[in-house]
Length: 366
Ligand code: GDP
Image (tube, rainbow, N blue to C red):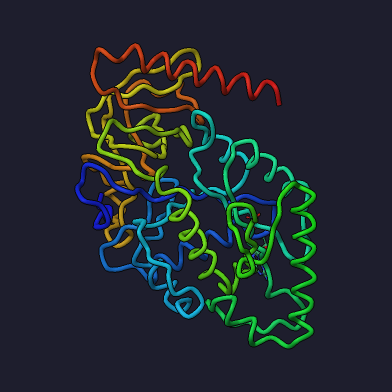
């Protein structure tokens, strides 16, 4: 695993990738947007850079730089200090509810996707409610602008470029549709504005008009996520080579490996052979990491080699598959901690037990 850590003094501590989730109503374009972002990451990355994690994808800093290049004339000051953005691959509520962390969410920031032609729908309101409860800041992707009748598509261009090429009545129509979103966000308790008109990003939600299909507006979406986390979340993103902390996204049977867990490591480091504590159906599970598995790069795929490569260690932020004994009863949504020393084991078990209890209480109350 390599992380670009050129922006910090030593390997002892670094700024990790912010963890980004995508939420919104069904069919509003969450999957298409994630596909578009992943596609951009793959085509624009430097040779050798890894973009695929287990359950997540990285847009590396090099790609963020390239994508932001045409925006320089609008936002000259954006300097990229994070090593990239980590997108959780599965969009929607269910996965998001598994991303719990003490006092909030493992997600650092979210994209709320709204079909601009439809406006808010039931799951849009629900998504906002969940984001509010977990205190996760978000931006709105006002998606499917290419479906505004008469829209002229300019694939992959910044929104601020493509809008200049539309006729005045299309621009007006877009403004009306954005205004509807602003009103709906107000009803949900948020001030909102089109991103280029926001004066204070701490009090106002930014709306970025995009097309997940043509890629228009995606440059601004990525630049805005980067700008916001760098300005308001840098402290939260500092991590160090301490025992890793994560959350279980999914519990999965894998041929030849038995039960494995897909986890997001949001803090610290995890090594092969580490003792871990993870939440189980009846009680916390204490086990040892047998293998840390990352997706095998496409070019190395051979039928007999399997889908994964084993690595010695991974550092935050990473999506990784863990193979270990006794994971059959592991729970999705539970915390996972690397045990720093055997005499602290009881402390970690207590911590996991408490977190699982609090998840249970919350879920029972819904
Ligand atoms: P999800 O349920 O939110 O993940 O939505 P999908 O990504 O599956 O999209 C639902 C449908 O809308 C699919 O047929 C997509 O091709 C289409 N779609 C998504 N984004 C856009 C867009 O920006 N423009 C247009 N024209 N269609 C889109």
